[in-house]
Image (cartoon, rainbow, N blue to C red; front, side):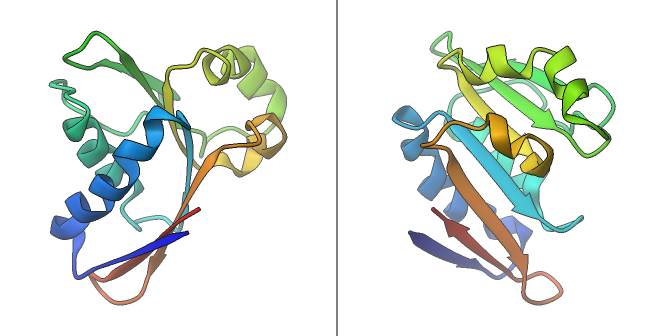
Amino acid sequence: MVTVRVDGLADLPLAAAAVAPLLRERPVAALYGAMGAGKTTLVREICALLGVADNVVSPTFAIINRYCAGDGSCVNHFDLYRLARIEEALDIGCEEYLDSGEICLIEWPELIEGLLPDDVLRVHMEVTGEQDRKIVIK
């Protein structure tokens, strides 16, 4: 377990630097945290470290955004906030993404807990002040 404390969202590259190397061995990461905790900003920073040149934005309405890194690998960014039932996740092919071996960064993963691999990387983001965050990586 690694804990990273940041003094503001501008410091999220510190947390991204702790998460990104772990994705080589454990490519599925579930990001937990309240609305506004900085999950999408953390994904943006992780993607930058992985060499993604695309504009990384929340896939709130698309559910999944797919980005290509400079080495040709792909990063799948999920935002499951709008899904109400696990069947909706299955309908969009969630299991295929999770089993692909590609990096999957999942915001609001609670709905698909039963589908997550045993070795999922869990990133818990806690708002500890107006801009401060405590990030626990398990």
